[in-house]
Image (cartoon, rainbow, N blue to C red; front, side, top):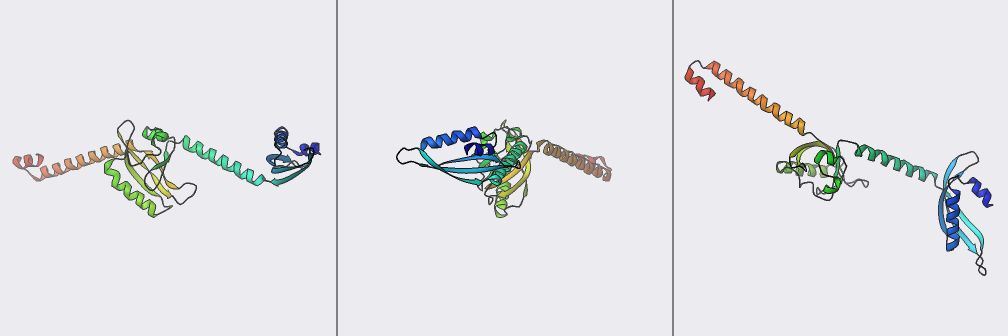
Length: 239
């Protein structure tokens, strides 16, 4: 009976199920519905039903109901697991200070994580669809072309990258990351780069290198002066 059937349906589903049933009867066509049932032992299962109604040809009244029910619990659990995984992934990339970029083999930008606004000053919408070469420092273009070719030739192999891009405010920033070719992966179909702003570190390294070069020059001058005792030779070294 209908009451017995509804007693097995999960408490959240009877009303939507009855509404679907009423709509199907009104249209006079087979209809599908998904809902949960509760087994006598308390286990909850997802099922998908397809209902077809046989009608009296003279009166048009429904005579019989044919229902095919399929257990879809595993499919629903897999879908839930995928949604949860996507939520976790989205939470990770949306709150990360590192940016993630996906480009095709021609350097066209397919995807950028929201962190690009922190790193480069642009929103992801401003850059998606544009070519990644546009804001790249001219001196780094040969390196990037070489890296992209190596990535294309070596699917799945990660490569370190270090290059400069122009920030939205106009200044150059140093970016460092790791790129991997996932063009062969149907879920990605792109070259993925995880990168961060390392401008402060690079400027500190350049400043340190300049200091070391000055110290080396000073040591060279000091040694040269020590090797020459006459005033004219000392002036030649210092000048």
